[in-house]
Image 1 (cartoon, rainbow, N blue to C red):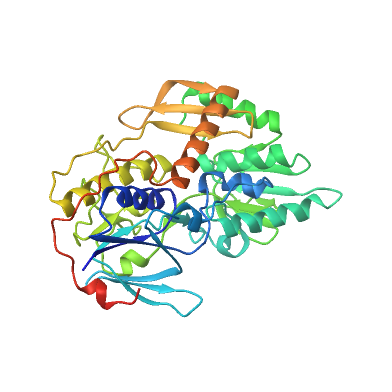
Image 2 (tube, rainbow, N blue to C red):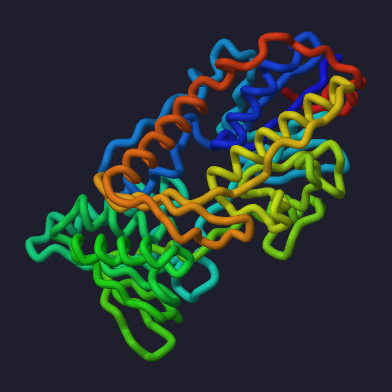
Length: 399
């Protein structure tokens, strides 16, 4: 009876860990099933480029996992039952239950459009491929109008900055504005903030600082100070949220639904469940929670892999690094900012800007795609046999 490992989500974290496990664990003892709603690998870090009108590579997951021994199950995860050790999956054939012995929860996050009235109905976001494509279609329509149109990006976090600059550069006929609740780039160093402001000026982006949105309507945004801003396309980047599935399943979570894990990424309430990426509430080496980011996905993924292999094979579980080193921000295709942070998460005085920063960010994106597309490359070839028995519950559920 083989030990079944089910991985929920094939984003940066899920695909990476699945590949690591396939290379480290013997297929005689284990089977690995990845459940994902889409057949492609989605480069979430580049969805703002997709929305702006650029072509973004999306490798087929069937090809990514081909030859690795990993089984791909296309379907939407609708529920998790950790007491019975099953997940509920909806697919074209009706779906059903899928049992597991060990679960890796990597469902990521999505745009939090529910915090402000009308945002869910009228705003676009770039946190998922379908929503990014809807925004792209809308921008295409505005581009066909003789007078162009207005785009309003709400939120000046990394996603908001990258989205506003990408759209402004790719579609210069559109009027782009960026709303910041406080000072633009408040978490950046003084030099990086100055560089960001210059980039916005160069691209013709109107920056509205110390502005808070109260409601979103079809053709305008209402601010708390009574101001009404006309908008042909409102893009919501003011925060992210996780799926309520973990909360509904009874896993211990934070107030915003992220799974509380120990130092090894193991759920503190259900020891055969691990969480990585945006879904996990993990405390970094600096004593603070890791932010939702691709970097955090990588670090939590490495730790979860080490813990799962160690636990299943009876070996010592090492502590891998859990750190956050900085932010890589693209400002269109030819400009960017590399801002390193200290152990407290505060911006260091120096930054790298311009084409050099853009090339660094591009290199990181290419490396992330290549690593995900080759999930078992370069890892130890020795397959570890399991030292723990498999739970029969996995065999009771359909495959």
